[in-house]
Image (cartoon, rainbow, N blue to C red; front, side, top):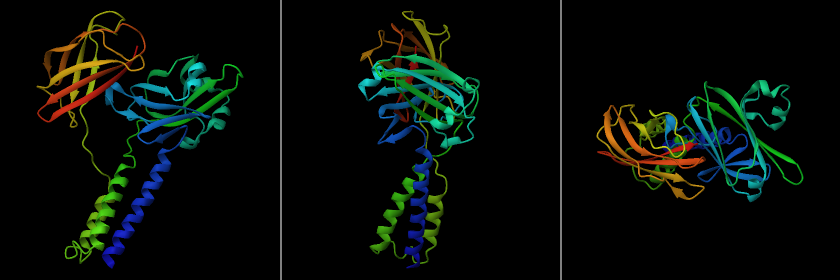
Length: 319
């Protein structure tokens, strides 16, 4: 009975932690819908994701960002009417004092919003996909503001999403995994299995403490790139230097690399077949044959095969 009581107490704390974490991360105008992030501009909805290609490769974020680095904001419209509206995008330093609880009313109350603005893109009509590329120079608390104006009524709709640059929190996955493990252990105990091992209750206490402590997860490979020929120019062949690191921060050597990509919203691939021609050492590889034939949002897909298996990394780009 003591053993069962200990497990139930641990289960309660994991459930409470999971609930609190979900409320902490479900702030602002961006919410999680299954495995997708959705931004709500009044009744209008769009899939929302942020990439940090230089530091996090293919990782997608809903709001909080781990690094002060180049960041690509992508909105894929779910409502056709958004493709006919003028949409503007603003990022400001959080001067409201409300932090994660800041709302549009707090933003409207800022006397001089221009002085707090770090990025602003004037209203523009973008069909289907809206992308922004901005490089954060420092960590801190920010607020994103998305506004859309109805072409006929002139009515404006807006959404705000407070976010942190330099965020390193673990999220709620450790609690979720701990919850599942505890449920399984509760079943085993109730059914009489593992009874001898748990008779003293010491094993349950150890497992409970381990589950409530921060979890450590293996990281994927991280791919960054530089363009030694200068920034990509439309319809000009150029080279990249790919740098590939392991989760331990070590350069990956001896890998076999294949590169593909294209423009998802236009449903076409790269106009060339780039390939790695030289391994430069220290995790660096020279990629020749890169060319882009039009401006817009591109995704470069890097397939990396090493002794540990094959990993696919997607690098988002806005030209």
